Amino acid sequence: MTKFVRILTVLIIFPALALLGSGCSTVNFYTSSPQELAQELMGPPGKLKKQIIVAQFYNPSQAQDLDLTALVGDPLKIRLRDKCKRTFVQDSPRVEYLVTEHFGPITGVDRNLALMAEARAVGAGIVVTGSLWKVSLEEEKKGIYPFRESVKVIKVSLDLWVYDSLTGSKIEDARIFSSKQLKDGEDLETVEWKQEIFSDIVKQTEDKICDALSDLPWTGFVTTVDGKSVTIASGEEVGLRKGMLLWICANGDIVDGVKGEQFVVPGKRLARAKVVEVYAGSCRAELTEDADVSNAAWVSIRNRRDSINPL
Image 1 (cartoon, one colour):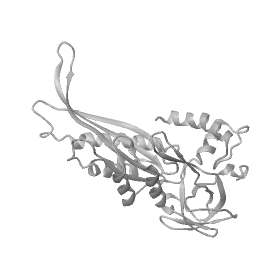
Image 2 (cartoon, helix red, strand yellow):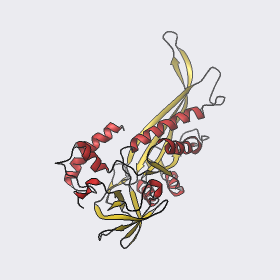
Image 3 (cartoon, one colour):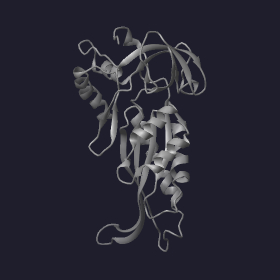
């Protein structure tokens, strides 16, 4: 999925949906330019870091000796921390456990809402995982006809799935390929190919993830409610500061997908809130109005247009 396609979706499809019913954003379609509409619907440009969990990658291939945590997971975390702007990579053993328990080698996570609920509990808006699709040694013809020669090529393909914790949907679904040509006398057992091929796959994966996240705003999640005081599973690590203004929004309705998955349609704005205490991985905010807020509520930053966009 390219950035162009995502922006086109925002500018064309989202306004049509918004005309049918208001969600957590109310947009003036008569006075806004296309650029302003995109910003209003997708949230502020993104000074806050998006919280990401890189979970385990599934290996249904015959190459069971491959350690995907060492070859893909750990290097990918490092690259995302170093290369992907406005992201905060965090660990969650519980989310990683759910990935390994509820994986399907073709469709991905088959209990996506269970996974997303655990991700929300630790504040993560994005879960990255995937599946090693294929590892093979194949013969190919190389060179100029009629002098073409048969060569052996190691081919590896990895499925990448990036889940959005707010909706439970995939925001990136891609198959990544890499290969290495062997010299005469080399084979899978005698040549060191893993580091070279998987380094290339990790780089491609990081590029895909960063591109997919570049248009997305930060999303937070409420973990506890005490009267008008709410605790949010995001804090200084993502850039939240005392005095910031937030929207607290309803979780929304659950809808069924065509393959048995379940998704969440984000709900409406419930109340305004102000951050009053900030810690490393969490913060406390006070509602400025009465509202029925639950632990399933999600949070967004109030932007400059909110003065003309009421609840």
